[in-house]
Length: 346
Image 1 (tube, one colour):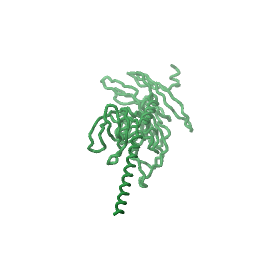
Image 2: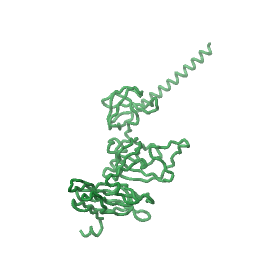
Image 3: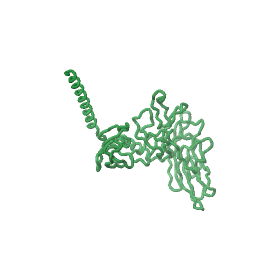
Image 4: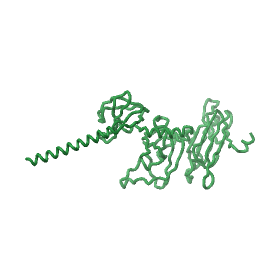
């Protein structure tokens, strides 16, 4: 009997010590969390617990600054956080709806660096994908947030990086399905630096190019040069016809589909000009060259300029090329290279 009591006391003591350790650990974790974060969704309900039947106790809105008080995994394993925000009761929500202050600052720095760069193209995410702070998928430390499928993106720059050796799913590795299917023949990753007009909290970052679908304007998509694809476009202006129909002129960048020099962003620039009389497009300007984004277009009414970075020689030395654009209301679009004889005569 005495031995039984001894064993029971030992078990009770062990359980008590384990519970005490758990409580101390929990208190320590609770005390250590005082993280500043921002709300990502437009509106987010706060609940009184992580349970499925939890009661809604408040709401926060996109861009609001909150304090993460504690973290907890729900019964299904989903990470949740308890947050404190002005004007609402402290409550719980899924962790994925919040972004730490440091990440927000970094994305805003990226947005500030590219604020004067016009969009080179418009894309849309084909699936849920990761917005990253750098064009690198060898680490998850640079992930800012997950963007839902169908997110609209302004593409302002392109980078090409050696493809990392990703874990093999057959070997138990976790393949990242959110960043495109892998083609063993492709040795380089294509990345796009993007702006997100609908995300005030996270305005800019990097996206893996394999997860982007280009949203080329329907009126010009069939006017791509043979053997090439459209990789960038910017609207020059709008022309009005006698029948009140309108059409847009575009500055277009293209790259070869096969045997392309992947170290450059485009190998042809051209103008697609809308003719209101025929309701069709003509090509009053076209030039083959190796170039890098961005193409800096500035239009002021019917006149404007654009500048691009061209690459030349075996070592691909870069230099700037400048052009002027004229769009007379009743005439053809005219593009003149600065330094051309036609320019010097003026």
